[in-house]
Image (tube, rainbow, N blue to C red; front, top):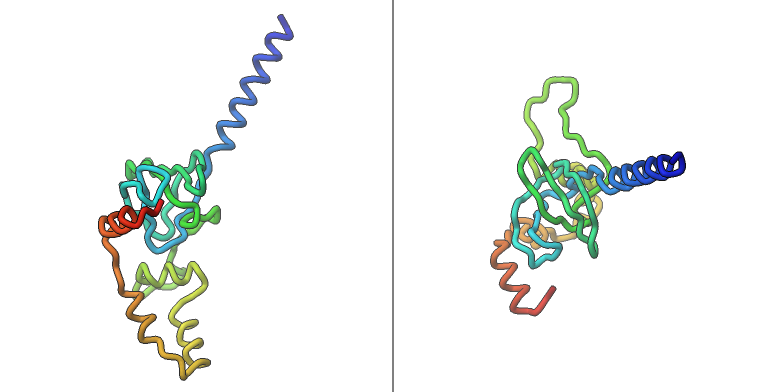
Length: 156
């Protein structure tokens, strides 16, 4: 009888350990990350998350991580390149802040690149033409158009 109890307790502990080990909290590390219905770039977009949003993860499949944001009712899959194990917190400094940073500035700062770094780079490379880079930053692709493009090209 004692062996059965010990075995039962061991199984319970193992189940608890494996359950807690699977769930983790991660942060969105890109400017805008899409949550999809299936673990594929072809999956329907069910939500968009922004830099710094926290997600709860439960499993991984071929580079895709199953995520949920209970407060927003979001469940789906995000590619692992859009997520970080680092906790990203966006807060203003202790002094009064005259204006807040834009979403783009926050995303670039999270990657270690901001307007100051860009200006320093331009100063060191005065002959470099940034016209096309500036134009490309303004391109926006409709997710439905991207889906059609991927399907027509037979991409998975």
